[in-house]
Length: 239
Image (tube, rainbow, N blue to C red; front, top):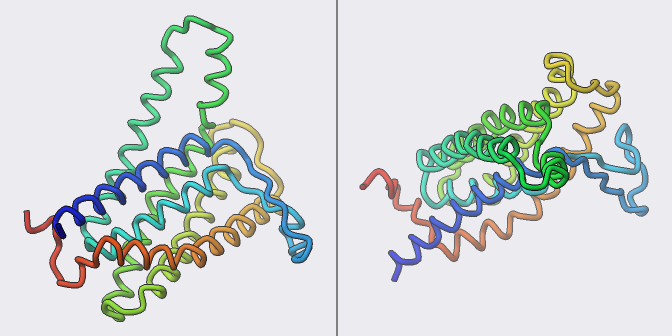
């Protein structure tokens, strides 16, 4: 029974990671405006509304899944998952653009289809670079802390690794997608520096909040699946 539970948990976390990653790629081009509660009021630079790409919410799930996976199955399988996921992004883009360029039975609907699914080149460049750096850092930071704390203090590993990796992700994504890529690719216009700074701060505050809120759920998943990493063996390495 424990073997069955291990298999289901591993597949479920892999599926959650890929599903969230795919959703993030497809929703990256929509800019969200999250109002700050009146009780909080206006924040410096950010103002009364947090601006972020639609991918931010789905993307936060990938860090949750990778932290659970790291705790349960070890560093090497987690890094493998992250880097294979990065490669899958290009397959996703190829399939989406292949469908966009394929002959359409309804040209009017095809135009709407392209508008919805064709994420901007700037967004894609920023998200892929941010993903590659921040997700690998998340795994490294998580296991660096685990080497010091052992199997205890899971909350510290989850919050610290996610908080630092989300900071890296936010800085790279906003810098590339909204500041560097418009100048480099000549697509669109770079917003003023105060808007870019507001995007960074606003996104990071919400991502940090998500990291704090998801910690109990990390404990729940690790408890349900079973912390197989505690025996010091890599389940995949044994095969």
